[in-house]
Image (tube, rainbow over all chains, first blue to last red; front, side, top):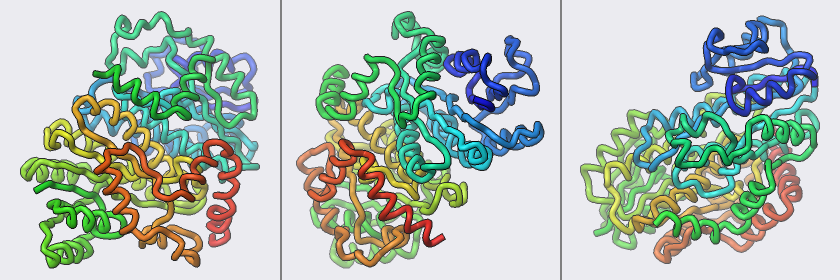
Length: 247
Length: 257
């Protein structure tokens, strides 16, 4: 891989993916929200780190301009990894939170894909959407999050058909990993038994392996694959089971 | 008298739903952006002796969403809320203006999620209320030439599924509808080929199927056998349905451009 762009690269899976690709990528562009001085890692430098809040409306243009200023006009791999979560009852979530989730998890990947299509087309590049196994399952405590991830799936499925032969489109569904997203979403580490989740390095390695394949959609981990399969093909059984657990 | 609220009720499937629920003696509150069309639909309903009023609002505007929730709070509690309003923006993803694509996300997905949260929070739903979400057959078969529309409808279906589990404990019922092409102005506007329009399901037939499914408290409905088979094919042989959708829709859309 020659030129790779990863969003949400200062933490969690994005950072682990950055570590993974670092030794082999000719040029690794990292996009994140944190200020440059707060990113305490040697692999971030002003010429490879683009700071932007993807919730802002013109985020895609800002990134494109940033790339243009550095004369980067081609991309081999674009990984939409940035995502934000929310955990809690439906009526507890404010409209601002709902809007923010849709902006970062769904709109930013759509707009950025569109903005960078010319760069990707030059290299017959690949776009990877990091979705979630939650997209395939009912998610009563994070309904909006699940909806944004399912929407990414729907977007990718249709776009893949449109761009066949010019750009590859892939969706990856990881399960939970040891990232900071859970805590930021409002769920404590004790409640969810955080330690049982696989470490980000391990998940990132599996994601990178999946990216190296031509498969249009990959679920990471055998347990998650089973869950995803059940969610898709045994829909009603799963829904009733979940409903009973809620009571 | 029961109360039914329908977004996008001035025309198409929404109008047919308004008529169907009015026939079943519901008071109808329609929500629509098109004041002129809304007035027409309102008079049709009123002249037939039904109770109907409209809130004119743009679902892409958060201020309007707040106004809708406020008005509904002041009215009678809701027995059926139908998230029917939807727009499309067709053409290759690379060429359709991004602003249009954004409106698709706002109206088809963001607004229903915000309204649902607002209605539950303000407790304007009756116990045993039905929440109905109009998704699309594209959930099963993809929709090249309308990738963002497909995204919004997949998102809406997933949201409805999560909501069903979350509010099931409060006896609120949810129904997700996956219609194929319907004989409406919406379909005519967005389809690349309208020669077979007569094959599309008339909106009043669809509206009746939705009403019956809601009464029976079904959770999912794909309205015709043909579409059920197509959806099944999409699950089992996704490549096949993708190819079919590309041939019948995307290639023709590109031909137009």
